[in-house]
Length: 513
Image (tube, rainbow, N blue to C red; front, side):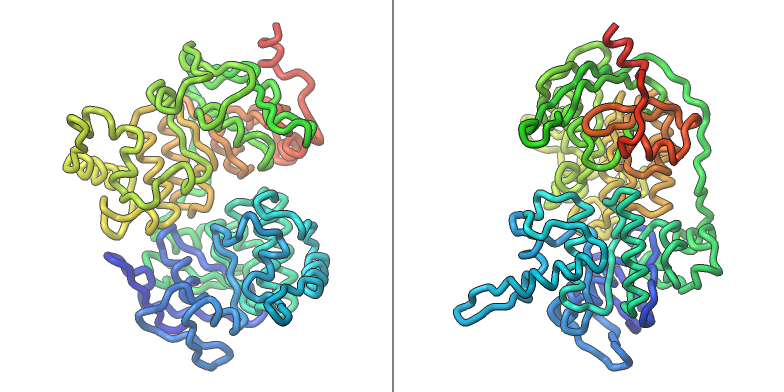
C-alpha cells in the first residue's frame, strides 16, 4: 500500500501511509484506538475507497473497488465484529457468496461440505458445521470467519483485533493457527493492541499514531516498552501502581441468586445459589471462562433479566425486582459487555449518548423539552475530562467513532453520575495500552474515593493486577473466593476450567448459617 490517504468528515483517518507485506510473514499493525488501523485494512479489503494512493500486489498495481475484488486478489478479512448470518448454519455461512449451484440455482453442498470438513480437520478446528451460528460460542464464530477465508483460498489474511473476544485457551489456539498459516506461505496482517501477542507471533510491526505511519520495526529486536512509546508518543506504565484497599461497609449484598434457564436441555442452572458482598473501597472481580454464568449474573444485577430465586440489595434495600431506572437511581452504574447492544445508541450523536439515563432529570429537560445547550455543554466537558477523541466533537455520530472512544463515552457517562457501585464488564476489551492504562486508573480512582467496583473480566492479567478480591465462576456457581496475592495464574486457570474448587467458601458458610 503506497501513500494511502483516507478522509472522513472532520478527520484524516489515514494520512499518506505506506505499508509493505512480505510473503509468509505475520505483520502486526499497532496503534491507539482511532489511529486508523481498521480504516487502512478496510481500504485494502475494498470496504472504503482511498482519496489518494495506490495498492500493489506482486509488484503490479491493482484496483480494489469492493470486497469481491479483494477476494479475487486473494485478500480475506476477519472483522472485529464478525460478519455472520446468525440463523444460517456454519456451512451456509462459509459458502455464502461463493456457492456452487446447478441449473436453476439449486445449491450443491456435498463438495463444499467435504472441503470445509477437510479444512476444519487440517487446522484443528473442532466445529459442528451443521449448527446455526447463533448457537455457537464467540470463539467458534471466529473459527467460522477463518474457515471462510481458507475456503476462498485467500493468501493475504487480515485479522482485525482477533483476540478481543477470546478466552486465554482460544487465544493460544489462534496463535498456533496463525503460525501454521504463515508456515504454508500465507501472509497475515494482524491488527492488535496486545504487545504480548505481537512478541509471540509477529515478524514485523508497523505502528500508526493519529492516522500517520510512525515506523516499522523488527519485533525480536524491539522491546514492548519501545513499541508502546511509538504507539502513544509517551512512556506508558505497563504495571499498575496500586495502594492497599481501604474496605468499608457493604454496598451490594447478593444472596442465593438462582436462574434456571433451560435445565431440561443442559441439566444445569444458568446461576446456581450465587452469594457474595461488594464493599466500599474494593474492586471485586468475577473471573471465569466465557459462558459460565457471568453474563447472566450481570444481567440479573443490572435488571436486564429476572431471577427465579434469591435476593439483591443495595445499601440494605432490596432491589431484586426493581426496574433498570430504579437500580440506576439506587446508585448502580454499568459498563456493559457489548457496547453496541447495551451501551450506546449508535445512531445518536455523542452528546445524546451521554444522557441516556439522565435525560428526564430537571438538569437536562424542562416541561418535557430537552435543554440542548446544556446537553451539548455537558458533552463538551466530558470530552475534555475523559479525553474522548471524535471528528466532530459532541455532534459526532457514535457509530463512526473508534471502539476505544465509544468505550470512553460509556465510562464518562457512568462515572459522571457519581455511582456507589460501578459494574464494569470487560471494560478494556479491544483497547490499546494507553486506553487500558487510563481505564484501569479510572477504576482505581473509583475504589480509592470509597466507591465499590464489580469487575467482570476474561483477561487473567487484568484480573490479577486490578482486583482486590477474586470470585471464580464455573458452570453458574462460585467455585473460589481468593486474594490475588495468594493465588497463581495456573491455580486460577484450574478454578476457571473446573479442575479445582474450594471446598468451603467462607461467604456461603455464613449465608447457610
